[in-house]
Image (cartoon, rainbow, N blue to C red):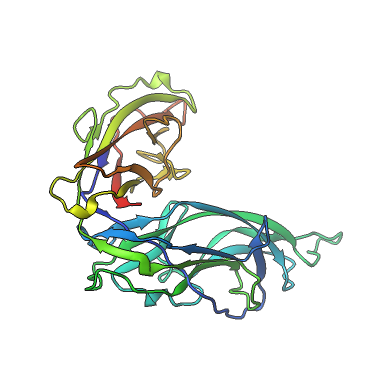
Length: 346
């Protein structure tokens, strides 16, 4: 069976990013966006972002941005002919700690939420590689490579109280990450791609705390029943079971009206491709989630999907849980896996 654990929490918040300082290094890559050579992406909160005061417990997800995918071309501009990996260098200006302490602004990367103030960098693969000469040595400069990163911005509660006014007044611009080499941050301006966030002053805390419930074929549990192992065929979708997510806003605050609710799924179980939930890493099968109206468009973990527009006391949306075979000889026996559901505002 597959168990869904919906925490009755809601919230929303948005993203941040800021300017730039550079530290020197003995060598460094130049990494720019491949399609246009740009070195900056500014994610701006250009409209009011509402955050529920219902649950501000630490690590509660308040908001997630859309998912962005960027491809970078990295070149050897500092004479490192053996090649060099590219990294995401988090909080390159070391200014994100200045954000109001009720909020944690971070990046969802490879399905994991990363707090930029707590980790220095993350390797994302070869930025340049050796160009071998006839004598077996690497000929300078190293060969340029392209590399792709998919990321989103999240905002979580820290457990500290929000501003007494209910509004974040921060109008600063924050650098979330810079794409650079293993040697450190490039000290040449406009050489490396950065993501920034601004507009945190549009965040407003409101009173809206819907009760979130999940309905499936076994209460709050999706039960796939008995499935013969002899049916296993790699890549085949064996069975799909419907479930629904319901937000009950009865008496939960008038600020809910005319808000769009978003749902995002997460799990502590192993995943494959950030979509397939594995009961065990060697189970030979996994669980995929999709909207009922798009049964073969799989939902990625920690990626928001629309739950519905509040124009009354109930918002409900239908989903599917699908069992997919990964092996012709799956592990036999009873299985469980679980997912959490966070509901936020758009």
